Length: 427
Image (spheres, rainbow, N blue to C red):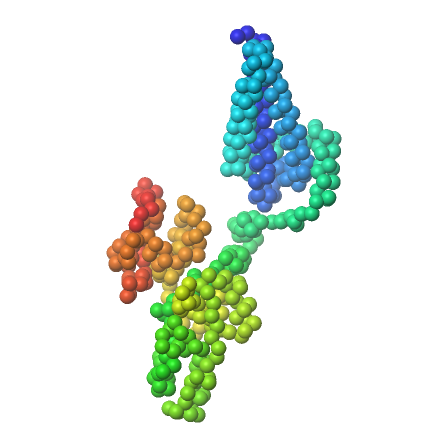
């Protein structure tokens, strides 16, 4: 094969490279976080400033990319057709067209876009300078295409554009916290507010086994003894079993009535109506309802209508502002450092909080673990109810059941293993 017959294929390869460039540029700029690019530009990165210009004129950039892509694809297809016709005749044109389409699709579209999707910020910075130059060269034609597109868009109804996504808000908070313009406590509060709508009552309730409740059939003396043994301002009242909560008794109201009526009193008239909600209810939906109905406590039911636990307004607010301590509360650390990288963790501590304390990022980025409790997560790893000493591994985490009571996990020991001792996920 002489140089003359080789030159068309060299040009086709160059055009294929250009097609890949346009595919990378399109996906990179479409996927790049404007917040991250702007942060880099504010730090003085010249490439980031150019990339920010492209993002600010994204319609022109897309028009330029479409123009370049079409020119490259048409030129490549035409050259291949001419070269194949000269070498093998018209009979080979159909096969060459199929092969060219496949090659352009994989090498000029799919593979470059897959790579650009994985590294959008890095590749957008790399393409920014050359793309801005092309935007200037194709400015007249790009302006015409942009005008046609905008005119067509005005004729069709559409939804309002989302200026900032939730992920970008998290990036803003993280960047501002790292730079010191936002202190850590305020950053945590804003992050909690963003996550507030994703939390269900199931993840924050006081479980049934820990609920202090009054049996309606107990005598006033027995109720008084029970009231004296705890510090709650109100208690749920049940008839028959805790699955049948019939109301809520305010302790202050009960004591006033007991002082007036003594042993002959009947607590039924003193009961406030009980509030019920399903375990899947979001706390941002429950809080306004409880506020509207002037309820401080709500009974959480399971899928069968039984009592799963209770949730209070204070429990909901603590999800937003953190732990609220009363003067009678006993301060207990949910995580205790035992030394040598070993921690004793409460079973009702969330997995995400434990990972954050250990400064360990979930390799699987499992969103289901964000609001999952350690005890719940541990039960999911075993095929039967675990015993004290049973353990499992999750990548570099070693988790061991430490304390149990009536088949309920109370505490676990968690250890972050060295990287060379990483274990697989196992029960």
